Image 1 (cartoon, one colour):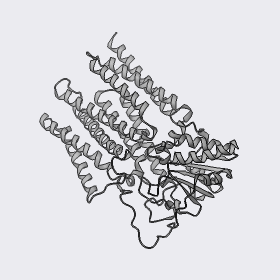
Image 2: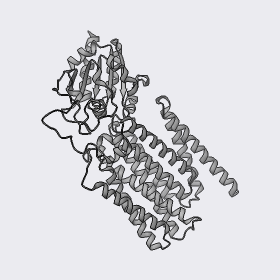
Image 3: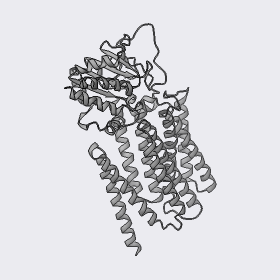
Image 4: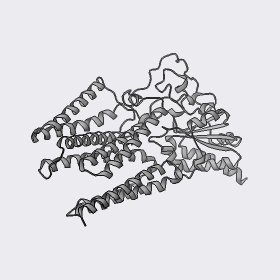
Length: 477
């Protein structure tokens, strides 16, 4: 086979893989086609990997086959063993490993070139993309590891601030850029190697310090942003090794992550800069003897599963607002069962989904889809809020900031101005909560103290099972 024909076949396969990526990404936008889209993208990646291995004329496949088998086994174990409650930290970890892979590719290419194996046609360009690959990959890796530790609750969910933090981060950025410039323009191998070590270490530190001041309530935005960075790192790695399909795939991941990050920031009525640098949730707001204007005062009013059943049995319009509490108790299947029983009892049921509910983008959608909740019952925040005043009952399952009336009433609240689901406008609100503590962001939810709110304490799954049992007793009777 001639080299020209070989290049045509390889690039044609890459184009096919890229088309499958685009089609798969588009199909992920709808629940009905998401599974097929995921499979389509996987086939595209398989084509890209196989063609790349053939194209690079590998002499010994022993290490590659070991890596493929080991990676496949780890992936299978993760798919089978990782619970849905652990999916946010799993996504963070995968983003981190994507960044680490790009960092290693950039480093390996540098040592290949500096060892005299190949002479680049454009040394300045090659050095620049190696620098960007290692920089973005390093920030993505350690930033994702820090996010993983927060989501897994190995570290506190609160943002961590210290005096002069922005100055320190700014200095780290300046040093990273300077060492990158030295790496690109210097022709001395020893100086280049020192500069490489400097900006690699600085990138790893930056990833940690940039995520440190971001509170747990902003984790969905952080996950989306880190996902975008992992794509950009892969794109830069594609330029480093001259692989077209890696450039395309990296661009798709990077741009989709940017779009999703923008959407989520808009849903919180905050800029990305505010999310990254404001230190939201670093400490609870100071309390004074007098309540601020707009602050709701009252007491928490508990309710039992039996009394909750009595309220729901008479309801004809019910909206369910899921949050992380549903995820941590694995209550999505019981939620679906309760919804079905309410419908059999003559009620119309909706599920109100806030864009940043949970701890990763689309967290609630994934959980409800796993429980086979009809997609038509899922209603976005802007669509459900005009209907909320006509709801007989709003059931809030572990959600906190996304239903907190302080966002619209209390100007002293850190979340003031954030769009929320107006659950407080329903005639009766039943909030399921494990205890009387604050949510992951550390803010008190003023919804709990409103006169139309009742607190159903305990594990969300167990509490809902109690309500379901009451409905079953009614049906059997």
